[in-house]
Image (cartoon, rainbow over all chains, first blue to last red; front, side):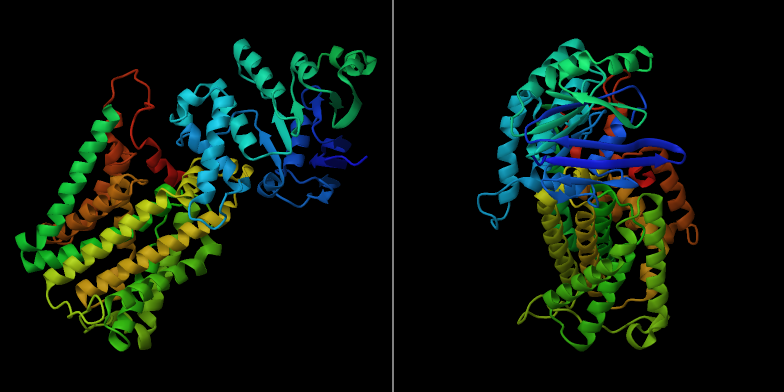
Length: 247
Length: 339
């Protein structure tokens, strides 16, 4: 069975350090896939490779059957690979609504393609429901730079969804959030449309087990194990890796 | 509420300034009217600098290049082909846009101080070419005796300073209005987003280089059109009109006005040029020194421009920015010059 995203034999080296060494990853449509591992395992590097901001020295990345290895982040976003960053990346001087409109513009389909302003109006129509879904309607007109950290994270998710993604790359989305905000984040991520596949990088294993149906464990740039959350939770190899105190 | 009041006050001030500009030629003498016409042309170049520096995040010292291209194209067309204003304006804007398009590969992938250096070099190269291409530009002597312009076919030529000033005012008002409309469109929104975080914009799927190229060419067209107004105002041009001091003064004016504010850039550039012309009379030979000191003082005391100076007066401990502050997202800071 062909996956939505297939990465094969991905290798990235920084000098003598092998950040990734022949890693394979396959994600299917609608799958909730988590990537875990100790610090320095290569999780973020793999996200960078899949998102297009890092080019591997070896290996191929195919998305929806096409080789996207030579494409940058913008071209991959237009094909449906969107990313949520470890630190919420928003446009601080634009309002929350404008942030979502900007994110929606590349993939929005206007009702009348050649009508002046049609694309922006279509993006504007996308923004309202997304902000509402994220609980940000009350701050829709507030510049994103004034929002609290948790609200920025919610805004970034709204922006990612506005880009009509088929694959969402989440890089430690719970970083810096309070317990209440993490609870809200879990609800939001569980409510994501099933058509959207998710690759989640997260240190908090409770979140990983709550949100994913498949888990890949990396260690020292190589795949240590892969399986369902239950299989990973009971795997002696994974237990050993985390017991080594490097997580 | 406070934002609404500030917006109304701003609107009132803008209306007063516009009325003042319209009645000015009947209040001041012909010499001052001629200076005002030249100042309008330079203020329009200032708007193009603000579009690049404040809105697109590409600080520039090279807008005198498309300004010169537009002026010389207009002068050549005015002397040999047509004395119709709209024709000259279109040719000048096209020349400015063409020069900007040719320099896109040099500018659009650089950032911050490097853009300043590249654009400065382009501006200086253009001045050198103008000085040496004698058969077309008249060399360092420039082009003189350019016929008076007629705004449209069938209308009389603009024979006096008053008429030329009002022509320049109408053109500047029209083009500034067009820029303000442009900034409210999708293109304006995307440019402001790119100024905030270019990497984020790219990650959303936008072709950042394409947007910046469009802004660079549009700014070139505006500066080119401004060159046409200079020709109308002076009926004479030479490479001295487009030197480094003009670039630096324009950037100073835009910084004073607030880099991302079109109105602020217009007022700032006009103010600086007016002060320069006034200082030439009061302190002969020392005007550049005073303007240099003014530049340093502005960057130190008003790093966000006069438009944002009120933000520095907030009480200690108050948040840096308030959500209800108007036009917050329209403002950029001088920090962009250092990006």
